[in-house]
Length: 286
Image 1 (spheres, one colour):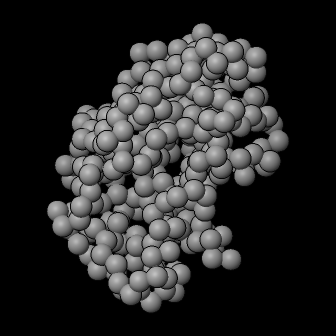
Image 2: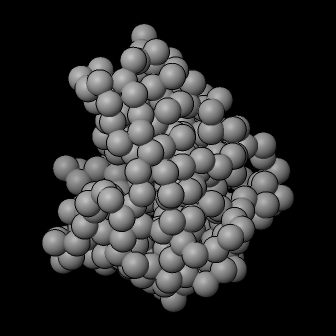
């Protein structure tokens, strides 16, 4: 079975690449913008026609949430138009398309974890572009899997964990938002979950949506405190409200995901975010 991973140099793509050697039954192809521009329909069709993947995991995305507010055209080209291309080609060449989406598609006013059936109501350019990619999937492919995840971090790329580690060494105190609640997700856990789910995903008919994050719940403040504690940094973390922190894009105040569907269908246990954070940080600190 041939698995094509696009956006392979990002956090999730890099984790899949690292894991790929342990999945002997699969062959892998890894591409990024330098080798395949998925927003170019003609070039993408030519590549897919030549390589004939059985499943394509699209890790390519524009993820700078605040910057996205002023770069709408670029955001939509990567996050929406490219996915439409892949969805149409998925139907034409009969491969399963796995699209990574986000908890930010939700408005964030729930009081209990969001299920796949809860109504989306995205509030930022980034979130809207990701939600519209889901719609493109639903309308344009017969073989689609959408994975909504949250607060992704890794030993690769730029992310909250690395930022707090860096600032924790440089500063005596930090202020971190405490009234946005969700769940951190270690990209290595998501990568493994996706590859373990391939045998079931390959049977997909229509487009199915699944939630995946690590287990547990926390605020960004709690997350920052845990990072600082594990790193044994002396930096003091202080909680602040969203209204007192300047952000260009609106975020959901609550975006915890209910993962019952994923765990039932794919029969997987999911690690707690604290346990996974320790694993990631052991790589970063050693």
